[in-house]
Amino acid sequence: MKLKHLIILLSIICCSQSVFGQKANRQPKTSGNPVFPGWYADPEGVVFGDEYWIYPTYSAPYDEQTFMDAFSSKDLVNWTKHPKVLSKENISWFKRALWAPAVIHANDKYYIFFGANDIQSNNELGGIGVAVADNPAGPFKDALGKPLIDKFVNGAQPIDQFVYKDDDGQYYMYYGGWGHCNMVKLAPDLLSIVPFEDGTLYKEVTPEKYVEGPFMLKRNGKYYFMWSEGGWTGPDYCVAYAIADSPFGPFKREAKILQRDPNVGTGAGHHSVVKGPGKDEWYIVYHRHPLGETDGNARVTCVDRMYFDKDGKIKPIKMTFEGVKASPLKRK
Image (tube, rainbow, N blue to C red; front, top):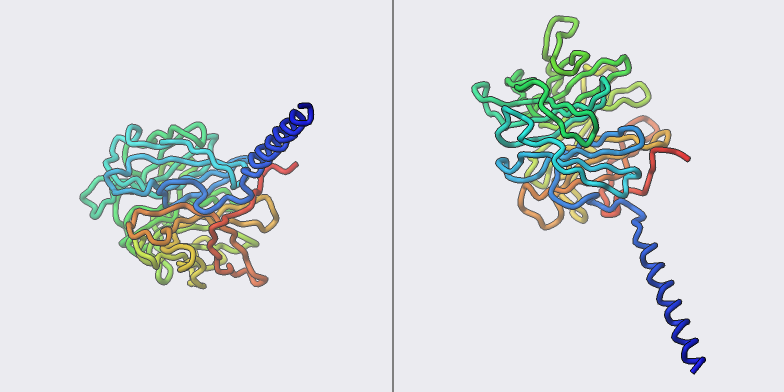
């Protein structure tokens, strides 16, 4: 009888160790792609303190795009959802199609720039708006009661804005759909645009094959201007880039760096880039269509590594299902 009890006890101990080991192994080693569930697109990746944040478009028919969620992570692997950081209740002029946020921290506040209403002419209400909050999870509230930019200038639909802070502290906004990209200079309060030195308010900086989704980063004294090409609903949506010595360009197209992979996904585009804690550690945050999906709104948010070669050119991005390894921003 004692031997029987001993066998039962050993069985319980072994079973417990096995279950514990399974639980321990459940901690993901990589982020996986997509990095969080649901249809989300146009992701704006940004670092606030020791956290990574992603602010995407809720990918659905335009009339259902009435809010934006956000996601935060300490390590790029484990993500927390923050529902409705911006929603229609807090934008008086908003009707539909809430798109492509750009988020920054300035003046001890958080600013979210967004496209709304998908205007097709200067006779409609809509364009690029700005909302403000006291923390990155919102709620963000409309700061102006009207769009910041509400007209077509140089042929650019007022959407897909990205706000860039240059080394001298000046903020610029790059924006535009319909194959045209403008840049404007923002006032210190980020709630209005101010003239450039030549007195103009808008400068067209459209590079070859540009469609939409501009993004800017600076590395080793060079300005890397990036954008999306192709149609966002189709499989050939992609990302290209240029290198310049100035935030004003000229931006001569270098190459395509992110595109469909028949073994991984299609329609890879409308991206952003975040820097990790390493000296030259970069991540591209983008959306793509999963294999087999034919609905244009079936888009998921992914993160993969981005590398530069010895000449400072961006290497073609390898899309993965694995995603990226953990990379906490706060070093021990």
